[in-house]
Image 1 (tube, rainbow, N blue to C red):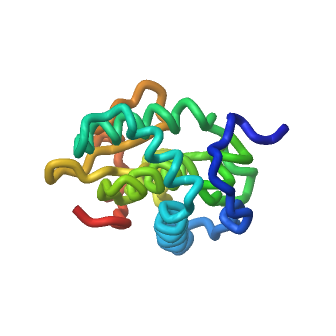
Image 2 (cartoon, one colour; image 1 turned 30 degrees about the horizontal axis):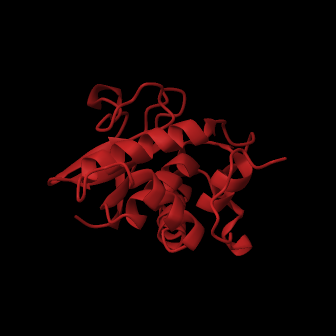
Length: 186
């Protein structure tokens, strides 16, 4: 109970499973993106998560980063449901918590898990924060992972229904310029 799917055979580092309360607002956005990058980097070095990432990429031709990114997107979309943070709180979960314990997360924890798997198989990744909520025009309200493939950053968004690799919120919906943070450079 509490574990959404069968987990890998590798031992799970219990210290890698946790949730972190984060500050809201502009300052909180920078803090959140930096912590997300730390979580993705740390997660990409966890044996259990590396094993899962390699299993996801197993069906792709060698060095086909686009196939791997699509497989990762499909896997995370299948494994995690979307659920918002508690009212008046911003939480970011470790990738181990998201995958092995919670099974339902908001966009930032989805993005962390996507980035973790991308880094674990050597795909460059960054986070992109978007202000798209008209009721909060001065706040970043959505974040996604973006993977670097063939010199382009492609959105990898598992919380938007039907969003294929490459989808990002359209420019005409942006209320201010996105905020980007590179985790692993192209």
